[in-house]
Length: 123
Image (spheres, rainbow, N blue to C red):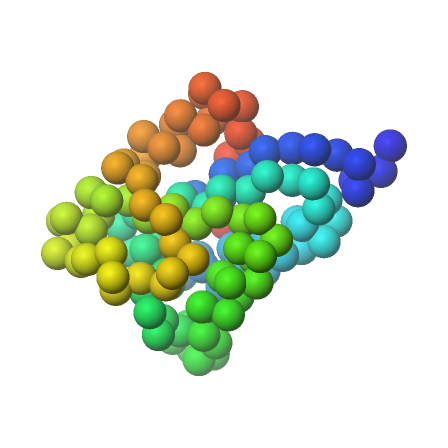
């Protein structure tokens, strides 16, 4: 059996502004090696910022939206915590169309791990 044959489920947890570019690269590499992996990215707190329209990496200027779209096309799901939206007074229309929403990022991560058998990765 090769890594190409492995079917696994992984949740990437992003809660900080410094994580997204590294996480997006990790996810791309993950899928390149194991394309049958189901990946859900759950964001909350400052981790939601990279999914906002026009967001780019502070140091490199890399725009996140094209990277997110490319991964979405490969089956990756990006979820934003609605509690974060409320606490930060953000609205759903401020985010890229590829993003989806979950009532609580922390609860979603816990559910994916304990109830649905997802492995946990925090970049």
